[in-house]
Length: 543
Image (tube, rainbow, N blue to C red; front, side, top):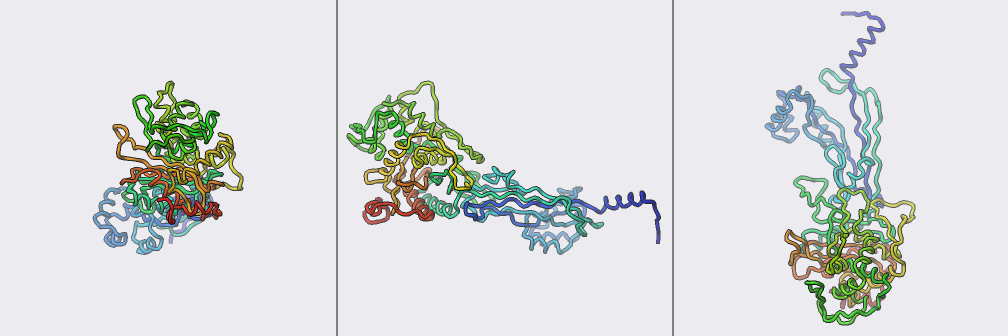
């Protein structure tokens, strides 16, 4: 036996040298914040996993490589190739994010040079239903899409540090203590209601299957608070299995895609007409002979409506009637109303890729440009922008910000009075008539409730301009019409078949979504029996 007697200074030196060779610092993974819907239903959670890693300098050439490859479920040739690629290195991942029980079975084999590292993996209980809104994280747990990216700093935790003693083989023998505890991320409570999100997702899938549409989106807002209650898009993807994902399926089209809104802008043009003092909803306009020429372009109605009121112009979506109003009052009042209602302006949600649309501003306007602006061509909006604009009619003329997060306290966010309460009420009445017997949106009706809205059908744009046989169908509506609780916008891109208009394919989606939403929100039915009897699906109802 060799006994060494040293001074205190020598003892400290030897102790420090021993610790340098045996004591190591490791990271303690931090839990990422939970994402839930407004009712606390989980939308994104972090589950504990174990990643298997290796020290190639110890593992390479081991006679236990066949055993390890079998345990990992990979070909031996692949394992050999990876070890060769990392030759001379001290670290390589073998597999990330294994279920703890499976990882422990592998580690229990005690193959020299193979180790485990505790981590967290993001899991999305709602799957594809809320994928485009919630987004997802990368393999290291950092947000790279959707709200996971927007609120990365809020959600991510701060890893801690601990010390442990290792043996000669590099294996951890025991923990010494925690140097810095891990700090978990903060939770995020969204404004969406998962029940309504599921309903809306199902109805959009159904509509795409029935119409053959290429893509689509549906968004529903709380009519008064501006909270997003549901927001879905098609195509979809599963954030829990991301192999071979089409990038187009990850887009939250309600916020990232811009469209010409078509006739859904006519109620906003009606606001400009009423504000001019030259029109009321009962003012009569002669639309004979059912067409009107502006410059070199002829704008037709489906038929000659003759002399009809301004209200009926919107109900019938008369191009001739709107054209006469636009030429009379000019483009500037229309443009200003669009701007006041948020068209062409960012919503400020911070969502990645959010678009602001386009409200053109020209030094000189040709007559045809004034007219096309009034019925929704030559400008672009996102579906969420359009939905927000329609909340003005439900709020007595007040425009409030949109929120993707649940608002606490029950107080409405501060808004801006952008049109008078009387004009907002007049437009709301006209919107209800659009779903009546003489309107273009009879299929938007909801049994037991009075609803209002406006259809839109626009040609899609291609490389050579407008495509004659490719359409976009839209519907923007409020429900109930007498005391609005929700605003919903439906967009279907490229519906196939003989019926492709907003009233034929988008309005029925609104009907089904609004019907389910009003019942989920416990809104008492308010429609008179005549409206109930005329609802879609009942004898004598609209088809």
